[in-house]
Length: 236
View (cartoon, rainbow, N blue to C red):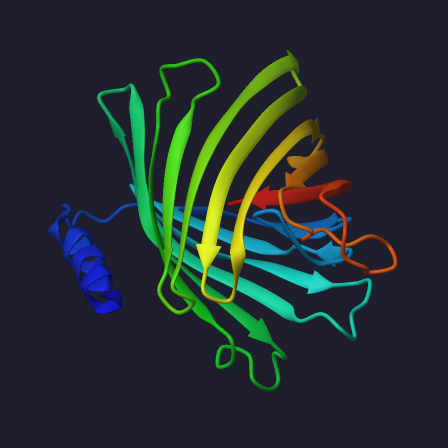
């Protein structure tokens, strides 16, 4: 099944016009007070460097989580992704691609142990308020499936100041863990600083119907969490 998905994606890429397109992108770095993924806490404070590349309707990049707190018990993570996104009739956006989740020591078993390949596809209704969207994810290695609803909106407060609101809710199920329903909400304050370096300050909260969010003592039993984050980026 995984080979079928990859073959279909590569065929779709080759079927598009072959005109050379300009490649643009951005690099960013940030800090987050918690490492939380789909309602499950994976670690404490992390650094989050990333690279994003875009050419026409295609994009690719990598997002990383490098542990700061509890670093001796947490693994490095790198999510390599590639996909295509296309506007349909000016009212919706279709998005599909793959993510390779890699874990471990960069000098040792990185890219070789407990890794996973996931395919995703989604649609966002751009014409509606808060741009509601639906995404489906299929994890081939963990035999997992996730369905997620998303929404978000950005308000321009001043010329150099904006506020983004975002929310998501989903259900995830895989062989390695019990099924889990989760929700996440957040705000991002963006300040466009002189020199083209934006500063983003975020406040994110999440809830889960499982005891998947540990507290400061790293004991289970916590189903809600709230944390701060800060990041900056450079476009090219």
